[in-house]
Image (cartoon, rainbow, N blue to C red; front, top):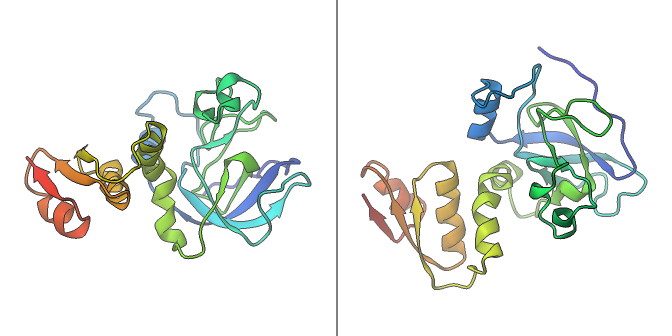
Length: 208
């Protein structure tokens, strides 16, 4: 067991009571120090869905009681070119959800906990008709496939695309591309996942 105190709520901070948190393979890498930069004690988790329980005085996007999501970033400088272009992942001062240090010098801790505090810029509303436990994987694997499709203008229906590998991101790739109206081929190293890809996820073709 590990207990810690969350940071004080800043003017633009949102305090989220965690309801669900998905497990991304990155969490396992970080927990086991596979990348060689882990700092302990660590609370991983960056596919967070929860309920807003407190907001700072300058928060305008979220209210107490809202169901919201939190991904891999909880802060940035807000001043550099990437921040102003809404690609904060390229900000040199971006702050990761966990295994990082916030502006107050305290370590960030992730969503495998009861509470997380996040800058309102990195809190997203969860639609009422989407089950919160199903929304969690969208906050990492989901946005990983949606973001480039959106960025490169590939959202109009009718394109033909291949999904290489049916892991967590590949699973979301099939679902998102099909929802956009594309023809989707799953490319895999064996036929083991053919039924899942075709019958459960709705892929159009399967290539070994």
